[in-house]
Length: 521
Ligand code: KIV
Ligand code: ZN
Image (cartoon, rainbow, N blue to C red; front, side, top):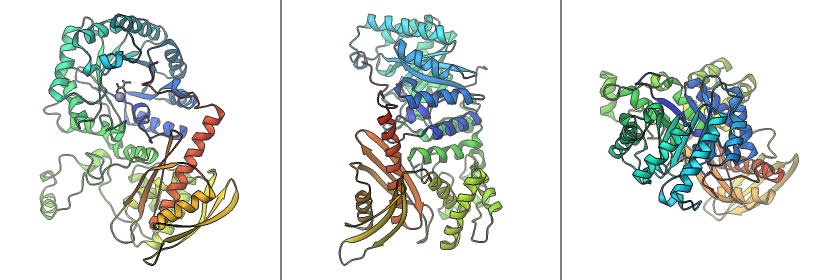
């Protein structure tokens, strides 16, 4: 590895997926891992194998399928976690065990260990991991709030025990750029053996400084950035992969470090992660937001026409946005649709194309012009309905107006049986959800109901996201339709189907012993 190379460690499937409501299915995790591998991510943290049978299965399969990336699994500081992690990752061509323990005073209090006891545990667990795997990452969780002397002491122990990467997590997003750079620099200068390992930075975005803190850590000597697509992650999220990668590329003049990422794959994976996690990307999000390359004000458009560099520091093509954006219409054929999907970064199989084409034609009948964002919404909605789903919407009719409550009549198939119900509500969506609940009684609490217009105009499609919570299990659903109430019904049913899948797994015992990585007892 050259001195100016920075490794990209993606943790979308572990720290990102841990974010409440961002749960992905097994197949979705495999698909995202394959996209990460393909775009040049050096290390993929694929999950936390001991957390559940589902996590273990996903990490094992990602390990078996990996081509270029090193596959990493997370383990707490105990032998059972580490052994389980190794079982899951051992089939990868290149693998890594990532073991961690909270070292700050607050985190030390959780397992109630003295400083010496914790130091001992670190020595034993890192040595154990290293006996299994020749690539071991160790993290002192909450490093940025750990006492300096103790931090140096435990890092030295981990290096002596065989750790090959030392990760410095800013677990609660507390640090700031100058401090982040200084901390890494001083650790490298002070800790014996530091020059034999790679230092990594892992920042959370609670104060909106994750990207700046990660880049500052690189200036201080870190050579691995831990990040997620779209900055997905608990609370305010993690460092966004697309931001650090594009910052290093665009400002190479002042940050002379390079990554191995093929940046033209950024938009496609950003869209896919947004779809499968149910976390929509805010329109003004750097790099991947819908408006990141839109120049709407007159003065900007004029400037852009004269010279695009007036207002553009990156080219849309560099992140995988197609240069042209010609809308499709009802006369466009299947080849044009396939072409457009490819331009937008979607690889669809023949069956999926057939299905999307049918819905594209339906949409084109209702809408004069079908824009790129409409197509993206169609692909997203495709993941919202599956013929294997236990709950299916057959038809719906809604009556609403100014004269009284709205009424919704719903027909659904539940496990192959047709059922119908009618309900009144405070508006059409409320009435529709009530009718669905009559057909499929449940206690799921609606945590989020979000509608956004895909394009402009009164015939625009609406994308609806719904997040439900039942007995601690969270599931999200999405759908798009030119009729907002239909999209709402479908998104609600999609989320209910996902809840059923997760509940069935718990019933079988698969996820019953799910543990949290913060559960250090
Ligand atoms: O934020 C954090 O401290 C983590 C550790 C598990 C590395 O995600
Ligand atoms: Zn984290």
